[in-house]
Length: 531
Ligand SMILES: C[S@@+](CC[C@H](N)C(=O)[O-])C[C@H]1O[C@@H](n2cnc3c(N)ncnc32)[C@H](O)[C@@H]1O
Image 1 (spheres, rainbow, N blue to C red):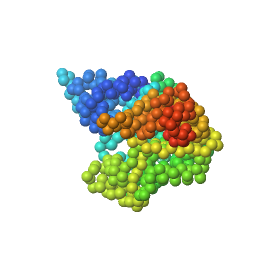
Image 2: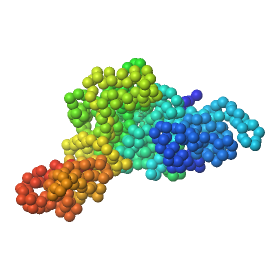
Image 3: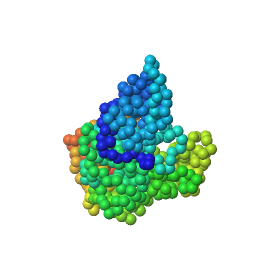
């Protein structure tokens, strides 16, 4: 018997209709649970949601609480009465849910309904997690293996992960231009492929795990709803990294790969969803090296990753080496890497030793923690970076550009429009000279503000900070020249005319003012502070 949901188009259509009618949607569940239980559930604390969905003493109340019954069964992993599920899924029925591989029948139980005779009702147990998910334009549902919360113990090595923080980060940062052909590498439950259905004409989704591909197939079948409209074709292929798509080309490649750095110790569990089975950060490094081979000219690849920074080196030096290697081995790519955070080896070990179910303080947890520390020490790793990588294959034979940035604070949500604009701006800068830049009448973007800080009573500010409200939330320290230029950058004067006027006013050499300011203007144009 299959241990993943089964695609039966007719039954899937009934399920979709029932889930919609039950208001088992992102908004419907949030309303049903209320803000406190919803927020607790996001923190992986199920208790408030369990209390909020407790079955009532009479089965009549359950019959009117379809959304609560579905949350309890599929999200919280609790058994529910077969009669309650039958009422929650009136067209599919319990038999249909069993046939789809979503639930199994559990033990009989005696139920007492006040004022009625004692009845007997079987319990139903979920065999997978099923939750609503969506974006501005779509209501979807995503089935995956039952979470650690519902299983109440360590996960199986071939666990198929549901939607997590990394999934939503990648979805947020993805450039949503119309794409002819898109690839989701390591699709898992298919969440990135679902997003791609909104803007790609055809999609290939790959995974090394057959169980993951089965879940993705089910979720994509469930996705065609009235609100979402017809779903473009998604081809599901099995295999390692880019092997299944060798020789093909795509306009967009997205991947939330198994990037977690894991000690290669035979006694440690190998979770397919987070561990590509390679030592250190070699999986992400090989993705960087190889992904250009499947990008069409102008094509973009976006993925998440971790990278090791050995003692005495910076993360930018590490990436410089990776990108040099990439350019040597294939078509050189533009590269925009945004490091979002970096951890020391112990912080990283604490995070991942806990994942999968080992409780901090327990012996298994201590062994895992020590294995991570030994592994990092063996390569003299001092920090581990995490971030979002965007690579672009130039459409012409111009030289490539590189942007290695840090953004540790809050960024725009979604980030895709910022990345899209940033790719276009960086490409424009690579194709245009300083003279071209000076001939443009730039405007300060509407989300840019200026802060002046000074000693109390001082006439002039000691520090001027230029702050970007959206995008990467950049904060730039501006000297007198840049601050003066930004003060007049309203789209009327070319940068050349404005800088020449400032030079005259301050009695400075115009050529020197231009030479000093142009690199700063390039930086601000790249990140959208000047438009
Ligand atoms: C972190 S999960 C990402 C799932 C989903 N795309 C998301 O964004 O949530 C990584 C996925 O990569 C798959 N995977 C692991 N090793 C792989 C490999 N060598 N080649 C392709 N996929 C792999 C895993 O089975 C898993 O489904």
